[in-house]
Length: 541
Image (cartoon, rainbow, N blue to C red; front, side):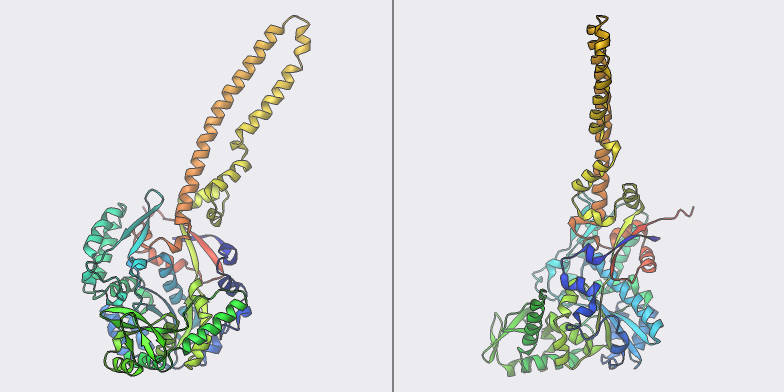
């Protein structure tokens, strides 16, 4: 089970993204960038239209992934008028990527349950697998706990030159899954749950067409019983609906860019940074050419890629005959989501929240309701041994962001048992004073030589004792450094928060696949704090 250990205001924890921190603390101060704030859920509820997405396509996709009944029931509810969506998303990553992917999904589910209870309306949790992303190098590896520096990296290779394809178009048969599983078997620690984890990974890839489908199947297997609906823009038959966005972007290719620039200028004026940066001539959609997704710019009256120029009529012709060749850039993904679903809430990390701050004008352009942006919850997990280390040294988890040498130095200064040199110096000065106070008296009896010998023996013994004590203190310092190193490697691997590095299988292989249920049960919804939990395993023997 997971027990709350400590928490800290996120503004104090990570202050790099000023806009995100301000949104956490005083969202009303950013009202100019967001149509609705986190305390205005009821306002957005009254403005959303029903789902426009074709439900049969979504149902077929989730069934192909092996969706359990709670998912299928939620998909059926999406066709009802009194149904709203809470959405999160991520590009498909190997074994689900860093922990925050799982955290987003769990928060989406639990928030949907909470809001359904509060507002007496069906809120459906939907996870958007951004299969149109094409950054293979970002998603083709994972980090597990262990190794020399507390981190073990393992990657997966492509059999062909396919790294520039969208992740949803990389055939799984062209991914070296068998070789990856073989290396993963060697890398996983020997536990009672190792084979279960390897079997789960292998089973979820069976009969999957693409890398992104494998990702979705794995996520659905872990969280499907809680009703999480998976959506893939490549697989879910959305051409007719997405075509309206592409048509408008082709008709006026730089209008979206102008709105982004206006928002960027306002952010910069207010002292913030713009998350989305575009050249003035860049379009906000891509065109697939010879299997590769290429950016377009608009210059004069022509659309240009690195390969060739296109007229407006040529792009309209391609859109009609081969709509799958078009994909959206980051600024228009949320627009498509709100066109397909009645998205009331979007769960967003720091970067996502920042680029949503640039989208208010684009939502208005498309006559769509901008959802409420709710920051994703952040947390760190530690086994009981790490929790005991922190408790024993009176260290808060977030203090481990510091260099461990600095923490150790502070602890040594505060711990009298480790300030052995200082203590012996004081003691020897005191003993010297006492002994020297007898010198005059003993000299009267002609015992000066004996006095000096005794004094020498006393200090010889004190120096011997100091040496032994110093050696023991050094051992304690060595133990202290080793423990701090272990704690830091757990909570701040690679000097980053744990959730941005480690993969969920670091915990599943150690505590069983049921760990996901422990995590779900304990998962907090307070996004204003960074939460830490200790993992306690009960002995049921």
